[in-house]
Amino acid sequence: MDLNGDRAAAHPETYDAQLSPVQTATFSRPTAEMLGALTDVSAATACAKLHQQGITRTFINGPVPLHRTPDVKVFGGAVTLQFLPQREDIFTSADQEYAERKTALWGVLESIQPGDVLVVSAYASQFTGCLGDMLVRYFKLRGGAGIVVDGRVRDAARIRALGVPVWCTGVTPHYASQTELFPAAFNVPVGVGGTLVTPGDIIVADEDGAVAVPQKVAVSLSADSLELQGREEFARRRLDEGGRLSDYYPLNGPGLDEYLATQAR
Image (cartoon, rainbow, N blue to C red; front, top):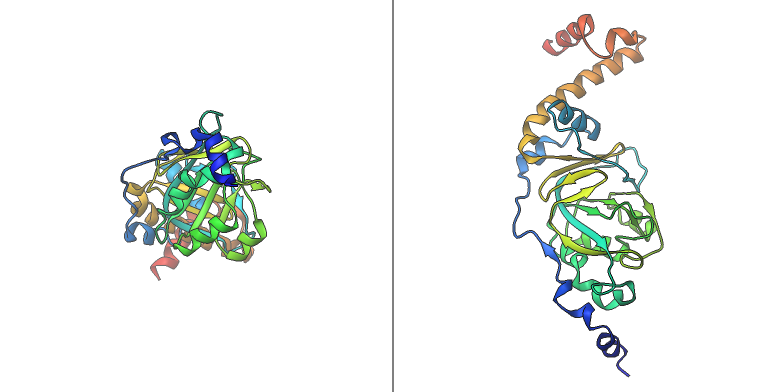
């Protein structure tokens, strides 16, 4: 008995053109110069400096590192995946085994290039396991740098063992289309954690979370960010040596003069 054929015949709507994933025709990945500029910039510094430039909604609220290690860090150009609510005439979880590979989930993974950061919009769903071991494994094999999911993942132990940095809102035993969502579009603008992410934005993520940096400000942002981080490192040393908080943080007045003098030397 051909169970697959019988299933397909019983649910023809899951095999028609309605499932063809939507995608952006083209987008520009960040240049090596842009990425190199952000190598040593933290998520917190990038977020603060963007805020000072008037770009105030860059923090992807919700996802936290699946790997709780002090040195977890990733930066790279965003490729995006958008989940949408299921509707019975378009997609239902009962047909996942036969239809999901036709969706944007497979499409985005097969579009991954070395250094990409996959950003997934899933409404912070507590029940959708957007990615699991096999898919993250394939992502790694294609050279992907890291993943930010506004939702959950499954196979957490296996993903940790793969060593791919992942930011997510938690874990679940569910597969991607098991409950209320399905993967509908890739490499389109998405909303993740209250932030707009467009394909090609630069994602900077570390233990403080993930931040979206527009390409056009990446290089200029770097100079300001590294200067700020240098000042803070100086202030940190002075506080450790017994300095007063009001003298060294924020760094201004005599404390700033002292810092500038050390830089000149």
